[in-house]
Amino acid sequence: MKLAVAGKGGAGKTMVASTLSYIFAQKGDAVYAIDADPNPTFGQALGFPESVLCTIQPVISLKELIRERTGAGDSREEAAGTYFRLNPRVDDIPDRYCGTHRAIRLLIMGATRGPGTGCACAENTVIKALVSHLVLRVGETVIMDMVAGTEHIGRGTASGVNALIVVVEPSNRSILAARSVLDFSKQIQGLCCRIVGNKIRSVDDKDFIRDAFPDYTVNNFISWNENVLKAENASVPVFDTCPDIVETLKELVADLEDARVASLAHSS
Ligand SMILES: Nc1ncnc2c1ncn2[C@@H]1O[C@H](COP(=O)(O)OP(=O)(O)O)[C@@H](O)[C@H]1O
Ligand SMILES: [Mg+2]
Image 1 (tube, rainbow, N blue to C red):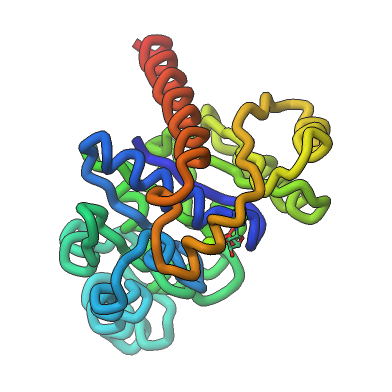
Image 2: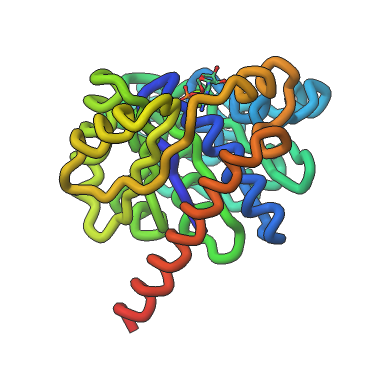
């Protein structure tokens, strides 16, 4: 399964992505957790010890490797930033540069240059190629904790993504951000999207989110839960301390697996 988790900052993407990672790992899947947020916190949410986290080099910081793989800066024209290889070799990067904790492999992408995808610099080219490689490679489960949107997912890569999970809290700003992610993903044909309502305190909160997305069926709601913050402050994964959240996200996973089986049956 390949999943991308998106939504406004603070909505709960990292909490959801980390809990999903453990749900798949518990099933015995080989899980790659990809932190594509410029302010990486996926590792903390997964409960990675600092001693492991500090050994993970963000891909964006691998200047020598990026130069070597893209050829950027190899010649005078390339030094001007004009030419570099658009399909750099990346297959060895995941294993070389990930950190592992409780069988989850974590890769940190780091802050990319330029707003969104627009920047076609060598660093972004390597990151896109890497995401594409992991998403299209058969076998592992990949859970991507995205920035606000889906900038790292190109159209070609999107064909390998099983679902985009948009986390939304009951606030207008969060809903606006979620809408723009969903609108963008409509351009990607056949991409399965699911909305997860988070920080829910009342039935009104659920209705507020449901009413905001009339084109979608919103079935997965996570309550406001003080234990989430406690887990964060104790550097413990929510998976270990919040069984209700785990239950809700297991239902989401079951639903995604059904949708995947249905789409495979449809395409064969
Ligand atoms: N269901 C919840 N109940 C209470 N606090 C939550 C809940 N989900 C997330 N939080 C808290 O909200 C903050 C943002 O969550 P995070 O997962 O980091 O969001 P994002 O990755 O979207 O920026 C964190 O401090 C987290 O502990
Ligand atoms: Mg986050």
